[in-house]
Amino acid sequence: MPDGECPRCKELLDEAAVAILQHVRAVGQLESARLRRDEAAATALERVVREASLKRENAVTQYHHHHATHGMAKSGAA
Image (cartoon, rainbow, N blue to C red; front, side):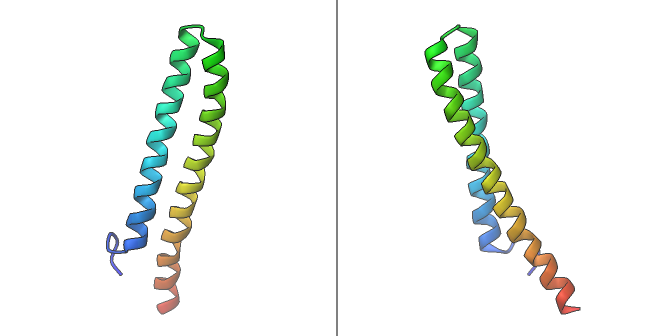
């Protein structure tokens, strides 16, 4: 299957993109809270950033693991 034609790759890549965007937004909100010296918000947002980071890492890893199976299938078929 040529690159870009696997529906599961597209789905996983879309999920990773959403997770990355959520992480970036959470980091921005945390930095904003710190600049305002809003300790309560910063403390709450630190947890949100950790959760978003984990979600991002998992989504990207799932994509990479799945995408690698295409390379294994190609090398196994040779």
